[in-house]
Length: 359
Image 1 (cartoon, rainbow, N blue to C red):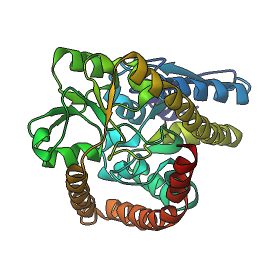
Image 2 (tube, one colour):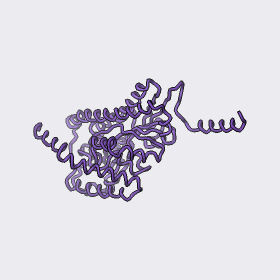
Image 3 (cartoon, rainbow, N blue to C red):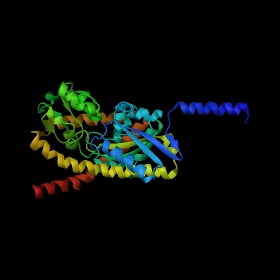
Image 4 (cartoon, helix red, strand yellow):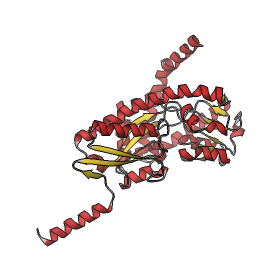
């Protein structure tokens, strides 16, 4: 070997070793998965672990994934950056947590008064959603997969009743996504507290109100201990998605069958996660009411009208953003309008009829 070629090869090897990569031994890859949730968090972290376990089983151990909870490898909201940098190989999360990278990512989680869980899956799998999502994440060297949904979420926990718009003024409210921007424009002080810190923030008085997920997670996090008024449903999260996001170079380095396993297991996890949330939310609502003295409330018509008007203002601003975000907005909103017309005469009417029959 010529000395120049040898030195060039050695320099390349040294450069490659400077960036942490997946461990590979005898054809077996070991990936690190990071997430913004504490380990064993119902619905989210539990299904991230199931995803990892099933990839390992389906691949016969050729692709092993080690799961790190929030703060174990990187801080909760640095998960996406860690995967971009190659500190981790794969992440589990929800796209709007990374909206500082691209505002378009809101649409791949949820927007106020937007698509439900099944409608969002329809747009991603059989509409423009996945192709547009691929374009957005390609800018950051990532590949995203739809990996779950919580279904309709709760509007939040409040220490005092919210009867009028004036009751929102100055409220310190933990709220995620575009719902936070809508609330901010109505005079609310909004913060995005990491999931594991919501309970302590409520208990200390650092925040006056908080939304997290729904009865299952809210019961597990003990949010009823510091607030008794539980507003249902969420205006801002009608069907928020969960995701698996992969370092694109690491994904493309996999054998084709392993790539297909990651994709297929993400899809299976999406279906199971929604079922998991539905079952446990249904089972968890009654204990909140009968054992913990929680009082259910709904936002008044005046408040809903203001939330709706402000939401449309916020969403319309996306049409004048960067070209890719504008295309995502146009596709999502076009499908949302069609879905709304459809479900006005299908799902909603069926639920109204069922309520009359069952009481």
